[in-house]
Image 1 (cartoon, rainbow, N blue to C red):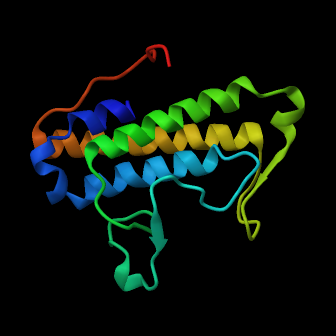
Image 2 (image 1 turned 90 degrees about the vertical axis):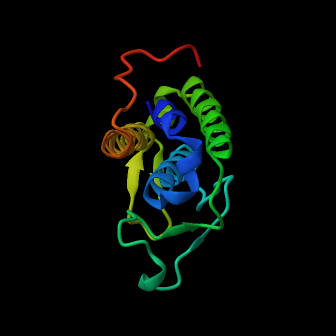
Image 3 (image 1 turned 135 degrees about the vertical axis):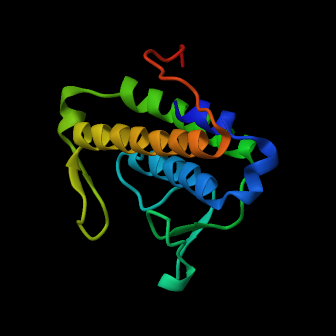
Length: 153
């Protein structure tokens, strides 16, 4: 559903809608982040900086990461494909023991079993895919439909 939402957004509007771009970007960076097991601090393939002050943060943004530039739709779709491959590798390598290992964020704000962080990640992606679809409906008058089953990864 995330891929469908990004794909559906018109190319000629891409640079003019920072909210749509930021939500897509944020979702992909954190998809990568939460799939990094064992945890490493922000290994994202698409560079970003941490906002130096609240003035730099988009008031509609959901986090304090700021992309270094506006990435193209194709760059985000390529990053999504890398994340899908990473997800497949993580899941195929799971064992009963690895599901119980801890995913602990630096500073200890997030401390989850691997199974929990995978569920957290899935919910995070679903949440933002729904927001992107809502923006598509509001701004473009339509959005992709519900995906009940993913095509083969």
